[in-house]
Image 1 (tube, rainbow, N blue to C red):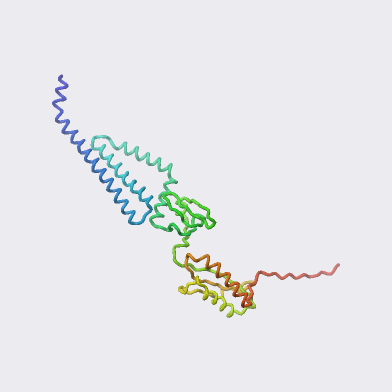
Image 2: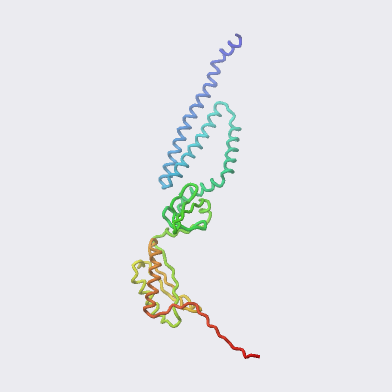
Amino acid sequence: MENLDSYIAQAPELIMTYGLQVLLALVIFVVGKYFAKIAKKLTGKLLTKRKIDPTVVSFVSNLAWAAVFVFTVIATLGQIGVQTASLVAVIGAAGLAVGLALQGSLSNFASGVLMVIFRPCRVGDYIEAAGIAGTVDEITIFSTKLRTPDNKVIVAPNSSVMNGTITNYSAMDTRRIDLVIGVSYDADLKETKAVLKSVLDNNDYVLKDPAYTVALVELANSSVNFVVRPWVKGSDYWPARFEILEQIKVALDEANIGIPYPQMDIYVKETPAA
């Protein structure tokens, strides 16, 4: 009875002390959850304005919410008297273990985020990266899906794509076709140059601006080489290349200008019998 009377006498003081701590803990928890939602919404809006991939937006927004919420839980436990130092240490150790176990996946995720933010390539671009070439079909948070010209699908890890050199053939609206045309040493240079220019002037794919280049570049072993460098739209590159090569061959044949091939002269020397 004496102990009960003692507890009853201390009740108001205990309620004032611990009740206030519990009340503050509840306030911290509620306010923290509110700020976690705000952080998620703000992160989503900022990433959406930068036209980031929706998958990345969702993941990063949820990550921001989780970070604020974990901080809120730790602050709430600390307010009611729980020793959070050990809890923080356990969370840190667990995070380190998970990070080491998933370092490859995390590297791919980080590379995917960088690809979406800096956009070295977009869906629909024809690129060469990680030793492969193809049209970008999809960029996810872990991998990039490419479709090759012969209709094969290649899935490359984002880290392999970002850690190497990316050649984007679709980044610019125009591309230059680089051709080397060899003609016979007997050919008239002015006539040859006029024939090559005529082909480019009458080709619908060739752009007027920038201007094309036709020039003598090399006196090779068996041919006189001209560079032919017309500019075309990026989407017309391969059809234009095929058509221009065919038209050049036909035009040179009509002008009786020979296109030589490697030749070898063999001299046979007879030795008198002993």
